Length: 532
Image (cartoon, rainbow, N blue to C red):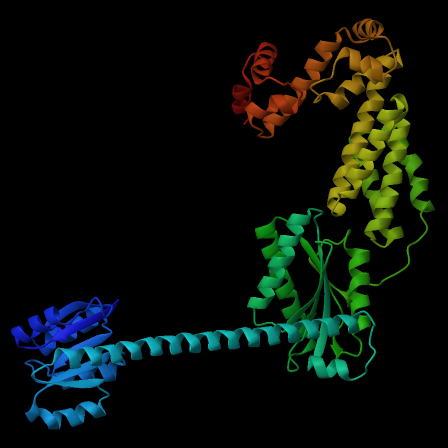
């Protein structure tokens, strides 16, 4: 409903106006009334009426002063002045102030109703016009946004064409891009994660940060949920050293945000600086080659191409000559020897593969599978062998950098060394194989004497007697010993006592609690506290 304020110093007139005018039929409501100009002003500010019925002459502020106040404050409302015959000079001023209409005293209800109907009609028209204008503005904004989006897509596609060597129409690209004379740096980035969801989030965050910064940078392409290509357009006034500093700072900032918010790291390679777009394909190839060949082994977040050389991979024979020596160390050496040999082997791999991730993983897979076959896989049934080889390939494929590779190879070598030594401790090699089998599968809740015997292709009764003879312990005692040994390690590392049981092969925590306390003399929680 339309709000109305009635202002007149004559109470009888105010009451008459409230009662004789069919406000509801006009879709109006009297929001307030005032007996002087001050009250009227307060009511206007409080209710923001659509229509004001006000006498010209009133104490405090007269109707014209109120109207002038409304005009100066740009308060949109329809003012209808109530005036007498002798107030004609005031009426002239009212017209200049934009008063909607005047009503002469004595007030005729029919005449006032017609004026009110016209005022309401005007308000409706103005509202429709305002809505129409707002729609036009909004549509214009959307149209401009669509044009800008289309222009942006065209620019990015043109840059992508140039970068991939698909130039076909000469100068047309520079016309579209409007940056023919600008300096360019091509940047390729790759995330150290295979998690698609994490990668997508990280790439979106990189693009978002770039769009919010005042950097001249265009995102050319995102691929496979972990790779991104960017084109930076440095200021012509900046020196080469200043550009290097800014590029390093900006890319390190992006890497820091990705690590903090997405829980993964990113490596960027930066091409050499180029004047104009003529060498865009060469710049892209340069950045991608350096990233491909150094990503896996690089310890830096930002790789500047001028500090790296792309080279063909060397022959792998040299690395495999060291594998036999590596086997001897596993069989006869100490832990320190293994650490040293792993470092030597990985250093050799980096040299012969030029740091290329795919080639490193191929060599590493061959090394690890060879070691497993020599020390372990040959003793397992065919289906188990296949499973273990697939596990190795899957684990190696998930490695994200040389740090993880070093850790993986060390753990594998130490585990195989332990296997080799344990087998030598027993006269009958089957006993050693059984102990190794238990150590490898202690976390399996279904591990039993029967399943171990089947895996080793022997009778369960024979295996039970053999273990007792060779170790002085039965199968359950050996399994319990291994599980509790692992449980204590986990508790010392800070794992929760309530979950450790499940991690070492116990389905039921209460049973794990009983076994642990019986053997160790304290509960898992008490052991954890003492270990600290």
